[in-house]
Length: 170
Length: 89
Image (cartoon, rainbow over all chains, first blue to last red; front, top):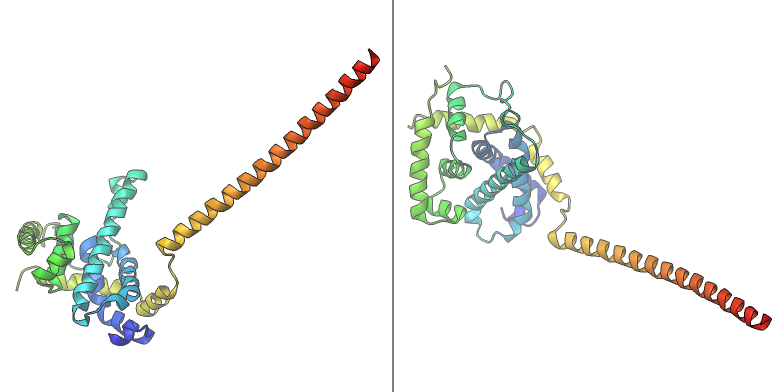
């Protein structure tokens, strides 16, 4: 970590390699689009490399990284929403089906379907919880109180359970 | 174990496959490229505005000088004509 902060590229590569699976999964959970995962994950790590020097407490690295990832995804979705105002995109253009092979199990498909029914901020909260972030960290990441996080997370989990039906397409 | 735990695991596996080989290398290389900062973008905008204003000022000055010269020449010609007419009278 210290070496990566000092600009050692080998250390930065190692750091990326050890977190790329988790960040990619996190991004996928929030955006729900397989075609955006690599670009967004790369954006997160580029931001990480550029801001790493400003991180004083190495113990906070994971919480900081996922906060960065969450904000990057929310910004991306916000930009997309804004773009729709100026571009004549219809619903069928936005909801192009995932390419063949990207969705390979009924459970995964059901989870993706359920996540898409939730607002992006709820998806981000669930993804943060899935990453093992504490409610205090989640409150810091979302800029709200721990109580608000607790309530919102509870509601998001309830809604996810409600929409999660592995056989919804059969 | 929650019913969707397996699905979350699959989601992460699926996402990891979406990253092409050499992802870390490409990312480090991309991070090396200097990104324009807000200050540098403002500076560039200010410089562009300054150049445009200077060009506008110079063009306006030259045009005004040409018009003034032409008008002076016309007035001069007119005064010569008036003098000639006076002498003839």
